Length: 410
Ligand SMILES: NC(=O)c1ccc[n+]([C@@H]2O[C@H](COP(=O)([O-])OP(=O)(O)OC[C@H]3O[C@@H](n4cnc5c(N)ncnc54)[C@H](OP(=O)(O)O)[C@@H]3O)[C@@H](O)[C@H]2O)c1
Image 1 (cartoon, rainbow, N blue to C red):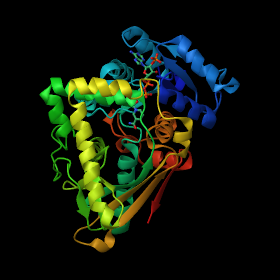
Image 2 (image 1 turned 30 degrees about the horizontal axis):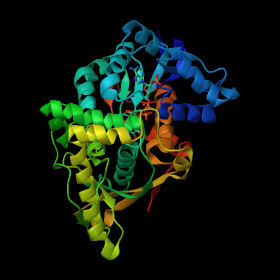
Image 3 (image 1 turned 135 degrees about the vertical axis):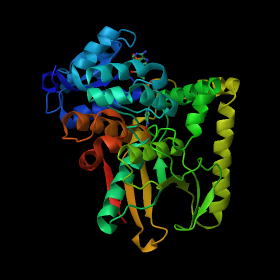
Image 4 (image 1 turned 45 degrees about the horizontal axis):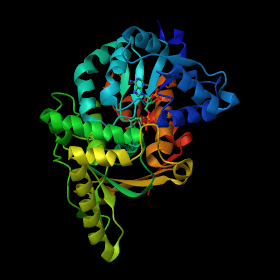
């Protein structure tokens, strides 16, 4: 089957879940049901998908529904062969994502997802990267708040710096200035599952704590060490900084991009993420209070009995932040390109998102990634890729034209 013969551009797999519904809402509002993007709702339960379509309103009435079970290889193969791209929100991905990736690789179908499960990404790289190169399937993990702003932002910043100065910045630092949002049950289930798997398997913990844990085999290592656990003072911005909550994922994705693209940021490129504390006398105590609270939370969920107790009191699968919180949510991130030997060349790229990071903005980023993979003229090869390595400038354009992100040089 050639690509043009495929029935759909995009299948939203997991459209009955919390984030999948938001992706469907966005695609409907942006592209309509019978417009330039041929798309459909997909999942394992026809009644639940029909309920989602009904809730989307009359303009969704003509949207096709496709059903398959994750444990039915023939059904899954037929499903993925019917589309150019599967956009999947079925998680925890380490539990449910592997058969879908295998089917996409076999059928040469592109796939984008929202996983932040580093150990599972490593597994997909090891099992499928070469086969995906051969079939042309672009398997693109981390197409949400983790890790598109970090990864696409760094790519965009480095492209700009190379054009201005003839050389990329040897160091890029992300500083999260402001963000407002919440968590869904699916995200919490994914985090808890990742910890539970890591407890059973030391190799998983080793991948998660390795700064180059997602790099291609044989691509070498750079100068970065493990993620900092304590706050530090960033003299360049004159503020205390604590470890950013998503840093352990985002930093590995940015480093994988550099390696996949042949090290355009340099072999000794360094990348780091932190959250900026308020200035003045409050900065230091707040930084330590924040780092202590994070460490205490991690220690608590590291104890299986406590993890079960806490898990029952948090949002359950299918639940997530309210519409009001999603719409009032936002984020502001600064990416600093730094030249220690020539500080006059330093540049800041400010990224803003117009909804809560985890769901409102993430749903738009994932949907635009799917449409980008389906319709844009990309020159990336197949493989288990990152957002920047797969989509680069095409995704920057989509995010700024449609998905509510701004990229402004300061
Ligand atoms: N990286 C980011 O920025 C980011 C942001 C948001 C979410 N996420 C991730 O996205 C994932 C989804 O989160 P969510 O809150 O939307 O979760 P959710 O509401 O629990 O939805 C999960 C979806 O998976 C489907 N599903 C579960 N088991 C399945 C199976 N065996 N076969 C087929 N479908 C199955 C569910 O279908 P049914 O309705 O039929 O049960 C549902 O559609 C999580 O892994 C989360 O961590 C990441």
